[in-house]
Length: 307
Image (tube, rainbow, N blue to C red):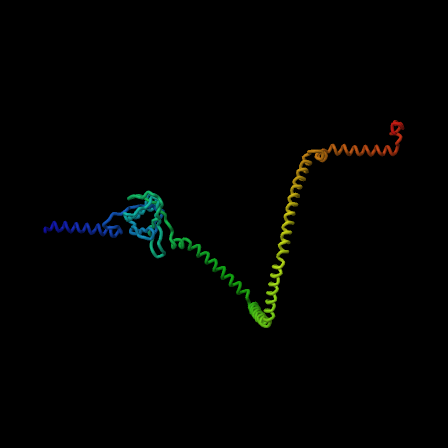
């Protein structure tokens, strides 16, 4: 074999090894095609070339490139298994699978009937992990914890200052008195246990007698309830009639206030009141004149006309 052939074979093998190694290092299948899909995220913290792409907990590909776009967004290119059918309304979530594990891409499948093709783009969302949330809230939580500890220390100091020797002695004496009282109550219960049992038995017998009495007088009770129900119905009817009468009375008062009818005119027209008042005065003067000088009013009348 000539040296040129040997060199050619060596170069060819080197190229093949380089291609295989390159695809292997990028976690790209060596002997089959892949489905290339891109997604744009607001940020790409923790994601690198070779990061895992999962779908329903199963690895379906890897990240092949992470680039920054002209509008300061992060474009991530993924190499997925060629036989995957991903709806075009699916979402790529950049998140963390755990506290220890790094970032990865999780595909959330949509419900569309149309599937993405090679090189197409799907929506991307960045989801903060547990450590990021704790980091963002760490200062706030630390401030709250520090304030709580400070308030607790202040309360303990106030409590310690309040509980002086005399107070502690008083508390101890109170606890001793309470313990003595509980012992006395226990001894009293033990001494009067028989009386308590008899009282409970008497109460039980009384309840049984009440139950029997109620059973024997059930017809009278039912009759009494029926009478009460009848009286309630009669009261309901009376209430209805009173409501009707009240409505009618309100209508009459409204008509009087508006000046309808004789009563309305009499109440609302002051001239009628004035005329009646004047007529009453005239009648009073007439009666007074007749009493004082009856001949004045009877001089023009003859006896025949009168009788």
